[in-house]
Length: 254
Image (cartoon, rainbow, N blue to C red; front, side, top):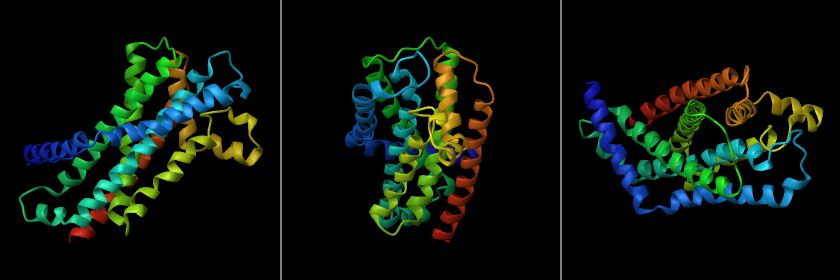
């Protein structure tokens, strides 16, 4: 049974990836907004921002930009899932001996591949703009692991939106608050520079702990408790979103 699920998931993932390869502008579009933000903050606003450290501003802000890249990319997952739901493809799959989880996991894995491609593009541009790190291979693997976990967590939220939306616009509009969330965190300025209530929210929302962890890994500094808080947030969101998405999916196809 497990082999059957893996085989069908691989086949359906290949189908979704072929759609992206036919329209590579999806990945390019996802990377445009983060790159534009990097250009704006580094070359226009960066000189006026005091981060309280001697590191370059591109080094300081890149972790937050990577999270914005993921938040932008998952909107396409909700969009593609909505089109599949409305196009009747799910009904066709139901008439075939395909395990139910395979359909959703195909969209999730496609999102993971597409977002990792966007992250590579954004990181490449950051290197051109002056981003430098002495991170070891282990540090890079830790960064990749956290970004993958964050992508999976947000993608399952996107699955909920794709299954529940009534319109195409509604399927992708849910991502706007997620894109905005890094701006109220330590991604672009230290939280102690914010007014009291805003600083409290920034310090206790998931993006700040993730950003602080990635920044420490890139700078080869101790990650402290931030990494455990970041992992707890990502795992908690992932489990809750997965449970909600699968429940909605079962109700939709029952």
